[in-house]
Image (cartoon, rainbow, N blue to C red; front, side, top):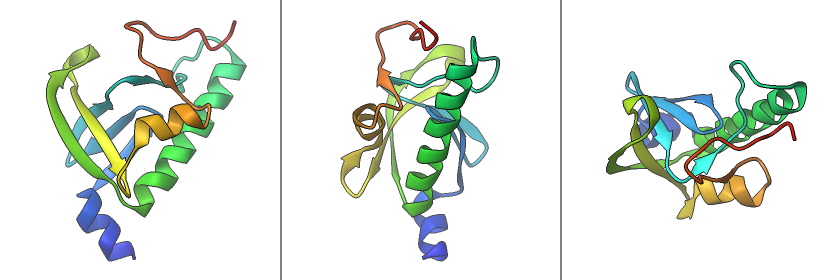
Length: 111
C-alpha cells in the first residue's frame, strides 16, 4: 500500500486544504476554496482549515491522480484536478463541508 501511494501520488505532499506540492511544485486544486491555515482571520477559520488539511492528507495518502488543467491561479500556481477512485477531490471536500466552490474570491470563514 505505501509503495502504491508513492507511485500513484508521485511524491505529493499537502500544504493546506486546497494546495499540494508535487515533485517540488506547488499546485492549487481548481474550483474550490478552503479556510486558511497560514494567517487565518479567526480561530474558527484556523480550526476548519486544519480539518480540511487533515482530510486532504487522508485522501492523498490513499492515492490520487493529478490532472493539470493548463490554467494558473493566484500566485501563478498551476491549477489541477485531483481524483481519488474516480471522484473529484474538490467536490468531495465541498460535500463534506470542508471547502466551498471557488467564486473568484476567498470565502469569509469567520462571519
